[in-house]
Amino acid sequence: MKARIPNATWGGVLALGLLLLCCWSGEASAQGLPKISLQVEEAKRGGDAAVSLQIIFMLTILSLAPSILIMMTSFTRIVVVLSFLRTAIGTQQMPPNQLLIGLSLFLTFFIMAPVLERVNNEAIQPLIEDQIPYKEALDKGMEPMREFMMKQTRQKDMALFIRLARVHQPRNRSEIPNSVLIPSFIISELRTAFQIGFILFIPFLVIDLVVASILLSMGMMMLPPIMVSLPFKILLFVLVDGWNLIVQSLVKSFH
Image (cartoon, rainbow, N blue to C red):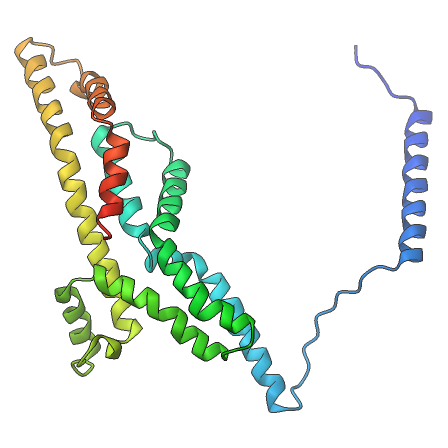
């Protein structure tokens, strides 16, 4: 049987809700509620339009911050290598994507800490203290990032985008535009990550071949070799302290 709530009870709950709403409205009226408004008006001076454009520019930068973090730091190489590692072991969704991305982010912050510290000391803090304009702060903040990307970028990839962009051959590194440097850095990172991924696949591939050969010689063709080799691959990875080796190799690959 379903219990029925009397109408009087519903009426009491409704009355109590109205009483609380009235009390809250009275207190809010006494204290004063903040007023939030968004107005679009015609700019009367050039400075008003400039401030509006600066706000739009900052909002655009904030919306692109995740892409900047991924494409201009060590995140790309780390997350690709960890994905290759999971595929090589054959654990499918273990570790989960959230864990791999979180580990990649923390390793990225660890590797990029000296670069970010330079950006903070040379650009952000002087800008906050009104010592330099924001344009100069942007140039000074970009310089440590450019140095980091230059060290990890291959000359062949750089030459490719210089040729595709049809720009004059730069005489030094400072003349290379960011529109050429950033994509060159990205494909260099992908190439390095794929090289590391190939090396990761070799020991696990050997285990798969050995297990498949043993099962075939025993006539157990109905048993998937991956089910038998998976525990051995996990055991091998644990015995050699795989996570320690992978993280150590990734961090040292940027120095």
